[in-house]
Amino acid sequence: MGSALADTLIAKGFDITVWNRTPAKAERFEAAGVRVAASTVEAVAASDVLVVCLFGHAAVASVVMTDDVARELRGKTLINLGYQDPDEVATLGQWVESHGCAFLKGSILVYPDDVRAGNAPILYGGSRQIFEAVQAVLSAMGGNPIHVADNPSGVMNAARAYSCFLVPTLIAFVHGAAICHRSGSSIEVYTRDLVLPLVQGPGLTGFLKRLSEACAQRRYDQDVQATLADWASDFRPWVDRMEADGVRLDLIRAIGDIYRDTLARGHAQHDLASIFETMVAGRPSG
Image 1 (cartoon, rainbow, N blue to C red):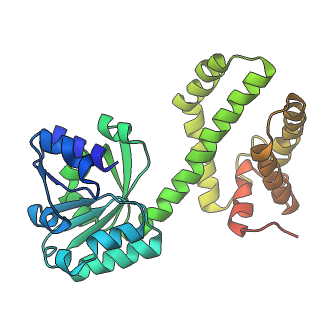
Image 2: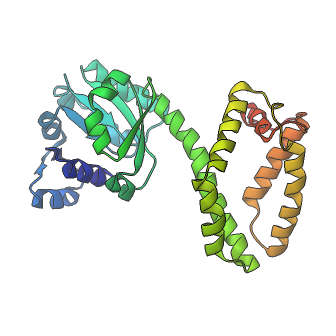
């Protein structure tokens, strides 16, 4: 991912200095005429905006949180794009800011090729003023920087929420493809004529907005077009059919458990969004 970020900055005309823990990975940049630093301190000294992309707090701490680096930080901005949990982000941010350096935490939600293609939403947490001050750099790295929190640690919560939407959605798509395969239906037709029109059309957008409003207000009795009981009753025949087809049911059983627990909470005549109450409760009722 670090190489993809460097590629986008170079393509946008930025004069950059690169450093990599594995020198061989920096060789192609050196061959292209890009400055390659011999050390982290040299890299930090070379630029006013510092982009760090390392996996895990231990790696970031060992590379960045050193006395030698600290002496070079004052007046700069450090953008950390590697994975850390919120407490680790807070620790790094406090350390960086204590040495007179502005700090942003970013979370990349896509693959390196998406970054290179400029199709990458990257979430950021930290001062909006700092975010706007380095907007040109952020926009060059993927094309779509999104400020989601004034607190750097807050970006990790937003990223987790997004992942909880994206990952099950992708797995559910593959699950649907498996159903097509086991039942002799066309995966191509399923994708082209069913899934893509839904994703690209206004129907899903409207549905998600309705769910969002209901969850934010915690009101599930407004404009109910199908009750949770309806959703649950329609669900059972699907499970029986998939079981007969021999498709794995792990994901589907989890959905059934959520339906069942939400019904037990008294939401049978409420909207599908009422499962929000089960989610925030954090454990099965009864």
